[in-house]
Each structure stands twice: as structure tokens, then as C-alpha cells.
Image 1: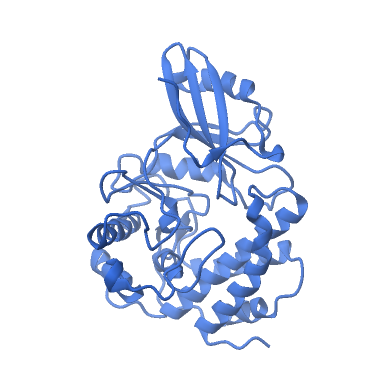
Image 2 (image 1 turned 90 degrees about the horizontal axis):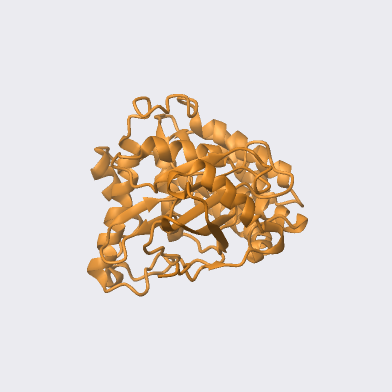
Length: 359
């Protein structure tokens, strides 16, 4: 039976086309299941804004195989951005743990193969929910169970002994929040295309009000419901994807990022703003925090507004980078230009949550 690509995978835009023949040769030399050689079809998934991601169908004498390829985008990149090598490393380290991840197969750091470094993993069939209200599900019970497993997977990640997993050098221990504020401030400045007064006010607030309680775990860095693949026939998380921003950091930053849907909607995604949580069966923001605290054995979270404001600030900085790449023609999606307006809206929202008035 011929391979049928996912509906969200389409022919790549001109700037993101890859040499399928070169990729096929590399797969034959580096992936055991492709050793006999074969033909490759590469289609690009729609919706991702950072590292271009492809469905790869491989057909050879041993049979057919569905893969997913993640690569760095073309063009001039910020030094610490688009780290596909780190994505590959962390997923390999988590294989066999309680954290659901795709099976990684091989990493290529040679840009001569398809233009930029990349890695391949097995395709995980299942459901990705772009709308956090989960339309198309069977009802409140399933939606509640999906959110329960979403939080369970996050708690499992934060319980990982990162030293035993071989990730003791994956980031610095302690001081994550102030370093991140500095990092994303630099990223924002490097991608700046104009003045956004609310971003200046938000950066100043975050720099002055670092939470007193510090802790370190492995963090995903971009944990939200559309970065988790769920089983097609049950409310179970099969794989957490998009590990580009993972590091050692403060676990509450992941939880706050997950909860941003209670405050905003992004282009192409829904939101939980104004949702009827009781009717939907979806926990409200307080319920999410309480569920996480129960699973991780912690009490109430101090400085929650700070963590929310930080997550929104970081998202604004990421959006600014996407917008600048769109102006240069390097962004991986046609909708990237919409992120310019999103920077202003996100910065205003962050200030509102933090109780800061832009100067």
C-alpha cells in the first residue's frame, strides 16, 4: 500500500525545498531501516514557524517508512537559535523514560546534504490539537482526560533526573530566569524592526523582580498542547515534539507557558479566553496549576504573575524574530508576517499581567 502523507504536509515553499536524491543517499548510509536505498518524497508540515519540519516518505526494497525531518532554516541565523542538534540530543536521552518522545534515528550536521543541519525521527501518527478548546473530541470527559495527560507528561519531564539521563551539562544550574530575561532581551534587540514601548517596560520589570525561590529541572521551553501528539483513539500523550528551546531551567516557566492560552490567542490557534470550562470539561487556569502542583508534590506557586509575564515576554521576542525573518524571506510559513502585530499585542498583555504601565 503506497504511503499517504498527512493532510498538513504539502509541497515546500521555494526557500525550503530540499534535495530529495541527496537525502535518500544520506538515509541509506545512516538509517538502518533505509540501508537498501530507495526513493524519498519530502513534504513540509504547515504551521511551524521556527525549524522547518517535513514528512518524509521512504520507499525501498525492504518496504516503506514514514519519517519526520527537522532542519535549521536557510539564511543568516541568530547564534543560539534553531538548535536542531539539541533537540536530537534531548529526545535520545529521554527515550525509554516516562516522558513520551518520538524515536530519533540519526543526526546530520553537514550542511552539504540538504543545505542545513537536520535530524530524522520516526513519524508518530496521532492527533495534534491547534485549538485548546479541543473541538472534534467526544465530550467533556475526553477533554478532561486529554488535559490530565498533558499535565502528567509535563510533570514527568520535570521529575527526570537530568544528570542520570546524561544531561548534566545541558544547561546551567540555577539562575535560569535572569539569564533567560537577558537572553531574550538580546534576541529581541537583534531582531528589532521598530520601537515597542511595552517591550521596554516589560524587560525592565522582569529584570527588577526576579523570583526569590530558584530550582532547576529539565524544561521543554515551548510546552503547549499543539506540541504534543495524542493517540487517535484514546486521551493519551504519545510524543512531546519541538524541543528546540529545551534546557535546564525553572519548571514553573514551562507551566506558565502552557497556561498562556488562558490569556491570549496566537495566529492559527484558538484560545481559552472566555471559555465555559465547566461545559467543556477543561480545567481553568487555577485548576491546571493545582493539578501540576499535586503531581509534583509542591504547594502554591509564588510569583505566578511574574512567570506568566515572563512567558509572554519570551513569546513576544520569538514573534519578533519570526517577523524579521519574514521580511528577509527566510521564515518557514506564509503567515509569518502576522507576527509583527502580535509583538505589540503580546507586550501589552505582559505589562497588564505584571501590573506595569508602559512609559
